[in-house]
Amino acid sequence: GKHLSDGFPKGSGGRVIYTTRDKTLAKKLVSEEHEIHRLRPLSNPQSVWNVYEAMLIEKGKRPPRNNKKCIEELMNKSR
Image (cartoon, rainbow, N blue to C red; front, side, top):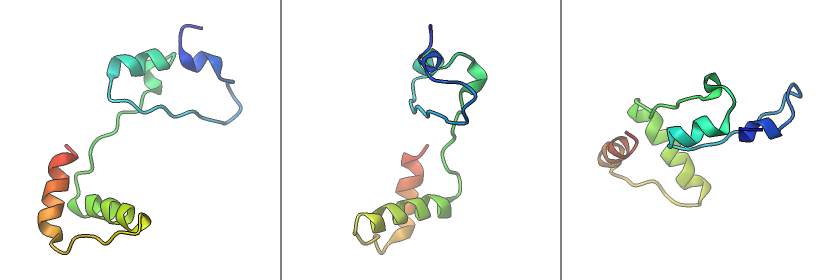
């Protein structure tokens, strides 16, 4: 097939998720553009902090104490 997704079975309930920031590549991976889901950065500072904090805890690290400054930096990076 013309698209990578053509090589996977249809109708079995399974899904393959590709992640890319390259819109051209995303279009090549799927057979129909409506299959592309565009994600937006988190806009709620507390949500950004929760994701960051969970990642640190999972790695056995402590979150920084000055979380206000850290949240601002994370918000800037997530945009």
